[in-house]
Image 1 (cartoon, rainbow, N blue to C red):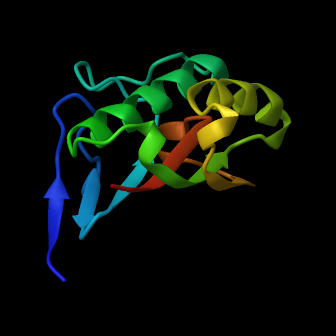
Image 2 (image 1 turned 90 degrees about the vertical axis):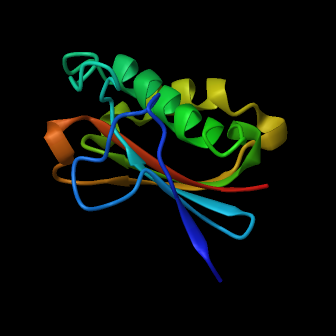
Image 3 (image 1 turned 90 degrees about the horizontal axis):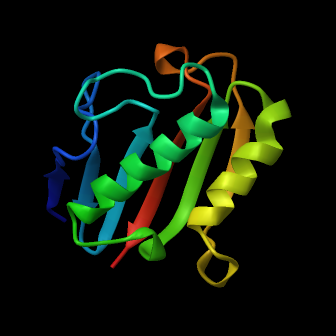
Length: 128
């Protein structure tokens, strides 16, 4: 099956040897997004997990939009957090982007470190 690289100028450019997303058939695999601003290339929020989480969600939306999809098409998310003690706040913000009637499957995992020392990273899988 052929796959296509997705690149949105509305989301931060990859900071390593990976693509923002790959579309294979009707499935889109979005790489983990962190709180980078697409224009400045700087981390948003200055360590504020709420601001970071909102920026991550905006970045996911931008990558999905480049494929003609929205968060309503997301079937699975993976959330990586530096401190699971922030789970409640991250979950509340995440939930504001995914109302219960189309909330995807997901897992949340605490990790020791994330790229650029951010607090949260989220990846997703979406289907047309």
